[in-house]
Amino acid sequence: MSLIQNTIAVTAAFDSGNIQLVGIDSGGSHAARIDLNIAHDRQSDFYQWFHFRVSGVKGTSCTFRILNAGGSAYPFGWPGYKVRVSTDRIHWRMIPTRYVDGVLEFEWTGTGDLAWFAYFQPYTMERHDDLVARIALAPGVKHHELGQTLDGRSIDCFELGTGPKPIWFYARQHPGESMAEWFMEGLLERLTDTANPATAALLAKATFYCVPNMNPDGSFRGHLRTNAAGVNLNREWLTPTPEKSPEVLCVLAAMDRTGVDFAMDVHGDEAIPANFFAGFEGIPSWTETQGAKYTEFGQRLEAVTPDFQTAKGYDKAAPGRANLSMSTNQVAERFGAVSMTLEMPFKDHDPNPDAEFGWSGERSKTLAHACLDVLAEMIDGI
Image 1 (spheres, helix red, strand yellow):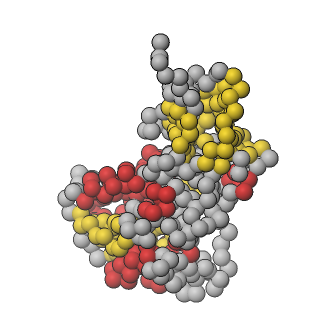
Image 2 (spheres, one colour):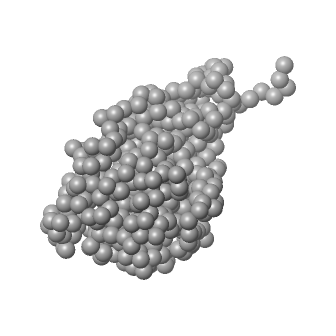
Image 3 (cartoon, rainbow, N blue to C red):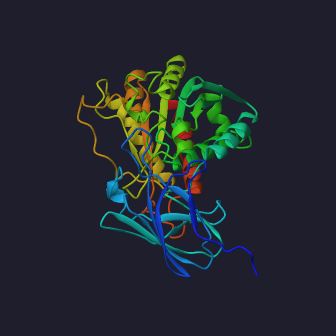
């Protein structure tokens, strides 16, 4: 007989964690209701990302209720959404979830003592540091620290290739969109695969600059959308400052040094159950030639993978009305680049669904491979 009686405990005091315990109501020896709130991003009204651990739940039927879901940044994203759960922190499966009267509810019966729950499969700063170390050791890779964040973390950038065309991929301006760094992991793994002839040919025609995480402070803190100052980095590209947005300031300065022919800013979307691009329609210098290359990229990607589509997406800006504080618009206007924002779902890619995992980290990595395949097809004309 065990000398210790386990009690249910909830914590988010770890890398990328976010939750606040409101209360635990034990309805019996094998049932419990656990009420929670998501914490706000620091100095911000934004919140939606959650990631927490529950212990002492073996054999207990738990009902979790996130009470403040209705006040989150994008409550219209909750209908049709499913929470991810893991017992090994490797495999993150979807579980039935309901959104009723502003409360997000889900059940879990503990098969073991521990379980982790998250808004999407996490990509922690620990994994980021492992990725940085691994890629930096790969042949032909140059590592650059472009600058540091307000919390003193590094903005890492990898330079790969010897070709004349400058290509930029950057991700996770919004830290809660963890699928974005999974995408970057897949991108960097493919770009460092020296046995792949298509990659070798692409690297001979282009030089890649890849920033896997533009917001490491927000990532570690468990933020949805902002950095340590509560600033949305994807509204800082017109006039970034060292006080509010040093992350954007250092990346944009590096772009000014290299130039940009093609750029992809990698994100996640709360509501739309599909992968899609957002472009730069509405920039003052818009040309049909520049826009046609953006459109062609999306059409080619849709043709090579069932995990991309062009029917769903955001409304387009009217001529001359683009928001130049957003990176895709600023990069297209500033450099004449073929620039785009990739949005991946917190739900699933409904045109090609996965009933067990939904959209996932592994699928994000595979989509990165497909994007490189299309870029290889189009590189001569970009």
